[in-house]
Image (cartoon, rainbow, N blue to C red; front, side, top):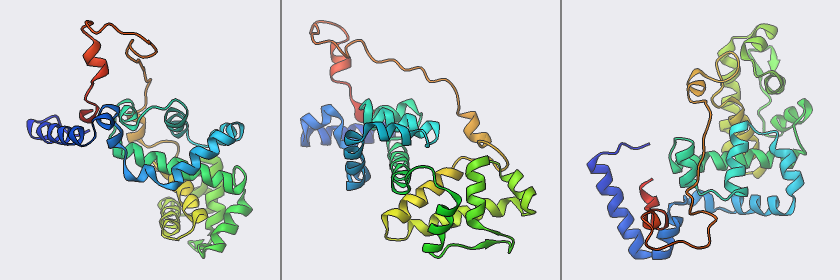
Amino acid sequence: MPEASPYFLAITDNRSIQQFEGDEQGALEGSQLLSIETTENEEKQAYGYIVENLPKFFSLLRLLAPENQELLLSYFMVGKPQTALAVIHRSTQTVVSQHIRAAVRELCFYIQVGGRPTQATIMGLLCRYGLDVVVEDKVFLGVLIFEYSQTRNFEAIANHYQLHRPNIRRAIRDASRALAKIDSALAKSFAAYLGNMIDKAGPKYGMSERKKSKSGDILRADPPVLGEFRRKINSPDFLKHCFFPRANR
């Protein structure tokens, strides 16, 4: 999160005033803080799919990482704005927007391939986009990707195939970056699948130490005004809850 210095607070205050003067209703709703990335057709199509195929959405949602599951449920199902999710996840609205887009693209990949990809599916896609390389002249990249998706253990795979452990992650990362540059919906969703797979992964097994340090129980509480149809205007909490400057969160 940005530092709460007088300089930064002055910048956010001026921006909040400008946005309020330009669109009073939108400023009260906090809608101006939505990034341009989250208004693309990709998110709209994902929302339409969720509404029309709710049971299928829940079955595919289980294939995502737990943090991405919670993110999509909070955003699409509960309707939490990105500003609120940023506070919950101790991040910024821009980072939350990026994580939502990555999670949506990974979900789209599962939709396109019909669920969890098999080794044949992964190798077929790599061959289709010219990325079916052989790591250290020993093992096909598709085999390593499938093995890691099952074990989440770089060290075990490296020992089994006699590979240099960092080269496995590097090969998957390079493939993800190459796929992201291809002008194809399937390629970009495949890139998100590979990127999310190794994101925040430890060098040997499980999560990275930095990711583990951020893990913990999340306690959430909404203000009492939510869910109430009436509120006394002379209540000391009225202005606090109804006219809260979200742009400064």
